[in-house]
Image (cartoon, rainbow over all chains, first blue to last red; front, side):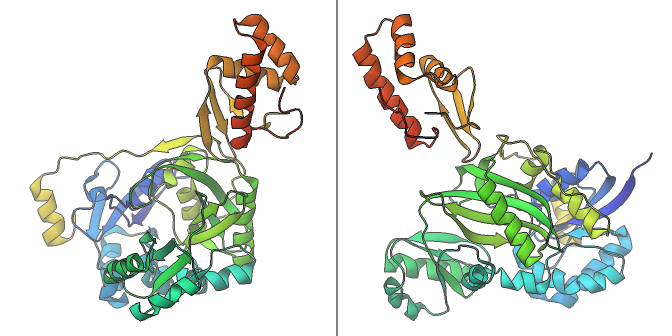
Length: 348
Length: 86
């Protein structure tokens, strides 16, 4: 029987030292058993490598940054939809999720499906609300404080001991060992991502991540835990291995059951030497290492597309433990004309 | 004393703890000792098996064995503290 074909637009085609999940999501979609795909890349910058990966991305369109406003994004998506007849969009950046969540009803009216967290879920899990989130759902989180003003930094040692983590509202985190370092990271991170800055208690231990998918009704459709084996200066996993930790999976199921999370996610967890788990962060999207989940038997992007299209998806119940991913940077040779095409015309 | 049941030990000497994701390497005698632990042999039986097979004396082996067991505990690869040392 011929498989259905969907036109799926994917963002996050970048692959710098903090790589976007787009290319991994696209690889997963090409391996979907339940459908075939035509992939439409959506890019913000002309040097995102996914734009030039013609073997896995059929066509790419540039889209405006979220700061340009929702209406600008909508009109660009309308244009792309007219050309490509999109069935599904998978946004892969935290910073773009707000406009996409806002646009979800309108896009649905145009026949474009997404499977995103609700605005409430998106806001509630935000780093700035992590303390309240932990209290509300009975999940252990490190103590954190939101600061808007450099002057409040001096009062931090009464509440936190060194080292402490200085985090940006969307991305970036640094470990500070002195007030001077806190100030320096405050300035650096706020200049890039804006205010507020989050100060978080430093938990000594080992970092783990869980990626998965919630169906929006409290059910766990997929969950794969991973230990980072090789970590870059930016704290990104460049290698990792799947593990089998029932406590971690239970925490994931609790998170999904209590929040009724809708969509893909990544939990960042820390396990201290006593084996206690702390939830450091909830990323409201699939992670860059999502292809590992596919490699161990859970094609989460495929399941996400099927949920977006309103189909019944059976939860994954198993995955291979002890399988690793090792990331590799690949230099592509690209004709200047292609760069010109995406830079000037916004399409390739 | 038991090796945690889900800890995998390959013939070549790679130990993988699927709960923590940690892996370790041990030498061939380490693999042999781990296999004897898996077979529920007591520390005395393990000592006898190794001392009979290799050119080492009991005192030297037992010191090394205790160190080895200590490392296994440290990395949370053993289940209980009973009958740890010889």
